[in-house]
Length: 77
Image 1 (cartoon, one colour):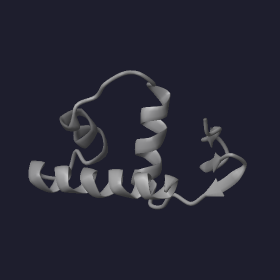
Image 2: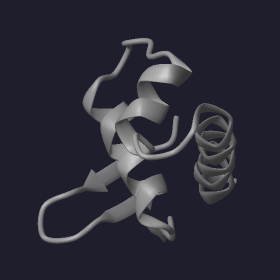
Image 3: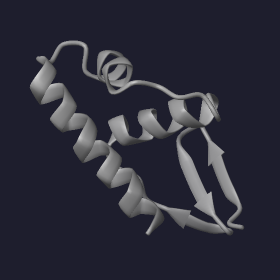
């Protein structure tokens, strides 16, 4: 199983098995940090879009969430 290290204080750093991973932009970092903070807890798309894109209309916020989830997945690929 892969070893994942996530540092949030003093700047965002993400490592997997000792290898540093790049995860831009800040919304992707915020999403990963929030999900890591609440392991095993399911969250709705609506809750995440409200948290990260409260100033954006529903359809656009959901599209932004999809793009951000894709960026997070690609960082681990």
